[in-house]
Image (cartoon, rainbow, N blue to C red):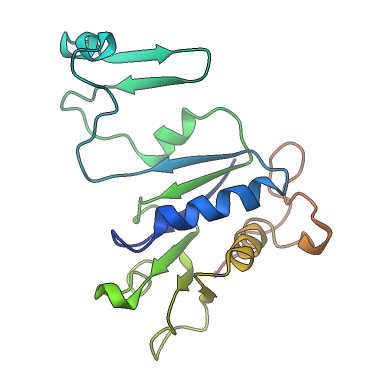
Length: 192
């Protein structure tokens, strides 16, 4: 499966961008999954529910299932957090996994950068960033090796992601950028 990251500081608009990208990428005939990493403690369960009670009683994993969806909750109980590769191994087959967060993973990554947030850009310190999408002009000294994209031009961002993952496909024909077996047909894309 292909993996492409979207990174940026909290409040930069990563989730909003992914909401816009997903339907457009799916319209290319791709099956897409998403991993969102958070640094905050979270719980999708509620106190008093049976699944919550099972976890509180010590279950390492609880699978909650219905006719509409299922979710597998895994309690780390002090164990180290799994790697991105560990999480990816749990996915069902798909064409593309978009990863929100995981800023330090070595996957091609688009930085969502908003100068108005007052945070420094990530691209100077992270070589996996292959493009920057911003709502303002990028600062002087922006490297020519990186692609600069307009954060509000969703179609251009989708074209860039698909071209990065497989640069040999002509998107003007709306062809799927992946071979039927999900393997990349061309080179890595992005910078060397």
